[in-house]
Image (cartoon, rainbow, N blue to C red; front, side, top):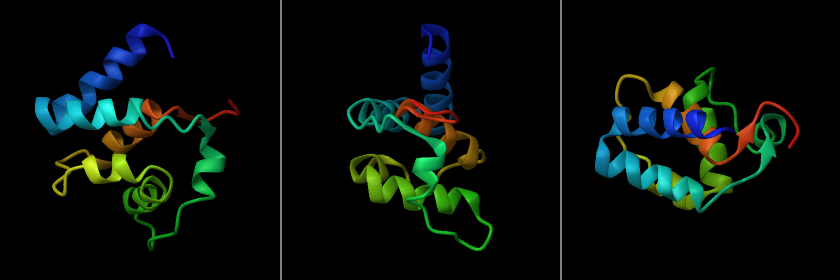
Length: 97
């Protein structure tokens, strides 16, 4: 991840969840880097009847409970995209690391 991608990712999370909550989530992600492929991450998730956002949350809760605790209950209008940014900040990538 280059610097621009990093800042774009951080800014997206903050835009969705606000400076205080979004900033806290992003910093918590930095302290809970998973450094794994999306395939490995998804193997720790539970299916939730086709709700991909809920499924991603199950993996976050299992692997990074501090991040899960920091995520707001009301995730706004773009929860799936924001969760993808959270995973990216935790270094969960769509390729082998």
